[in-house]
Image (cartoon, rainbow over all chains, first blue to last red; front, side):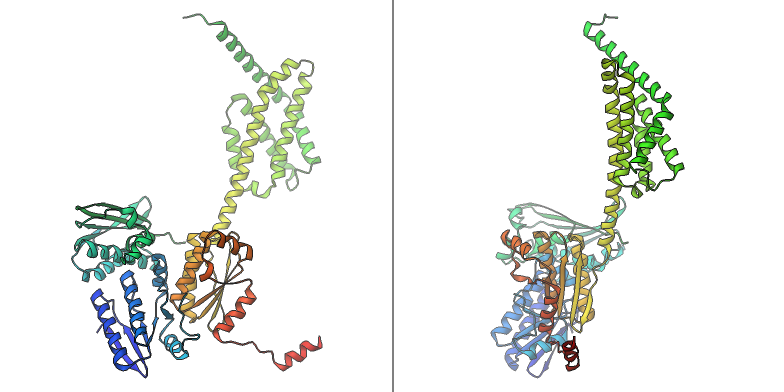
Length: 124
Length: 136
Length: 301
């Protein structure tokens, strides 16, 4: 099981548990979007702690997840980007601009609960 | 592990395994943890490039020695359509606007050396190198 | 064997005359060694150039230097002077001595040699001129060799110290729960920017920080490259959910950067560390409250 998706009240918590192929990432995207619609979730916390590499495709797909869930009324917060991965991403020029981030699961949930003011770091 | 590893790239499913092998080889050479991530990310980008444009190709991973320093060489080779304008392809703006991601210019930034040769109709060869930093 | 032309003959005789003059000067300086050397030491003492050296050191060194200079004059080779200068530099002697002592000492010797030539040839301006033609380039060359050795030694020390500063990992301190402060000191180049960023990102994870105040007051040269390094650091921290406040960027530097096209809008900058900390507290939700007791105490003073 590469990804686990749990429902917690109004929120969905998705934890990636292994490196994902392109196809698996797209499948994750579609599943999240579908569930947000089905449960009318108001927020998604997507935990990428386990990913040791986030390349251009991964970044584009995460942006896509944030965008598509937003269209269905949910905020998505990406959490768990590791220091070395964050560094590599900025070297590659991938800043995930416009996508909210937090340090970890707790941080992500706190951001969702706090609403649009404060909480998640959107990065302008 | 052997000094040279050849990995055929046939589909996107090979990308993850290739970069993980690259990480393992680089780890043998004593690269720092941060550098391992940079190398794996660069390999991911060039492997992805092969899949996107040539459909198939190969990646060769090798130890490199230059005097007292050791490093890793990554060769990404394909017999795809080739890149008509390399200078353009190596510009950040160009690749982002065409939705190609940040592939090649990004990979170049992550590595110490980056060379690309391409011929339309014949294919593309990319050679990237990174040298292990001395500690202390 | 062909006959020499007049020109060649003239040149040859000038060469012979010069060689003769060199030998004459060498013999003269050697004969006068004790006299001139004492003059030199006396003048250096009166100019306080021998401070910090024992009488014995001054004696031995002055002999070596004097003889080395005359040797250079005799052979036209400067290996001796170069070797001596390098030896001195490596022994760290130069490090203990001031530029004034080194260069002042040699200038004094040059004057002593020069004056002695004036004295000897004062009745024969032609020979004085010939003597100076030979002597002056030698004196100047020796001076340059020693001065350069001194400068190189100093530059080596500076480089070593810069390297030491560079290698100190940029410390990241936890001010309060969730707030980190990272004071950056010294110049930022690509390698150091990387060290700073890596240290910062690891600290964010370890301390679960939400805000970082990065103070660059002590970063001397902030140009567009440094600004871009800072931007990348800020972006990387943001990916980990932390906001970075940059303090210590002077208004002038900020203006300059904006003028040359650097986009500072993504940098949250404040003038000084104190403001930065207050802003950080605000972002995290801290409020500093002065207790009644403290207020009473403050009112008394």
